[in-house]
Image (cartoon, rainbow, N blue to C red; front, side, top):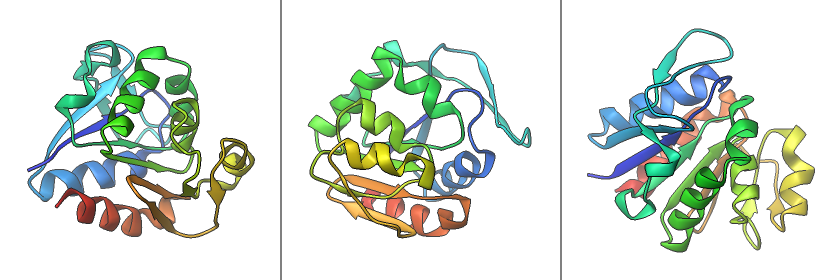
Length: 169
């Protein structure tokens, strides 16, 4: 089974964390919540769920994981400016491992410079950033471009989850 990292900070979109996280666990994979600081409780922006960071990004090693999932909301803004988060995502990309981002999640991918030459989607407010990062932006519920999986909004979660689980098999 795969080892999947979930990148989290306060203000993530609740369902974009909860639904993929539960689906990954239900499929028998291992999930680890990685954040800026270990043992910190991260609250969703809708305040329906909260999760405790199990591993600080500074302690995370890309070689230890098969995939990373980046929920949207405002959390990616806090994550993308952290050098250790960016390093971790780059390590996974360098090893051609799965990187999934929904809504604002691709902001972290932009900072890690992993979208150049890929096709991707995101929340419309991030569209220009995705394009400026060198990606071909398309407005579709889910886009798989090599090891990168992106989706737009919570409405797209079923397709996002389906493609992540398919890549993990």
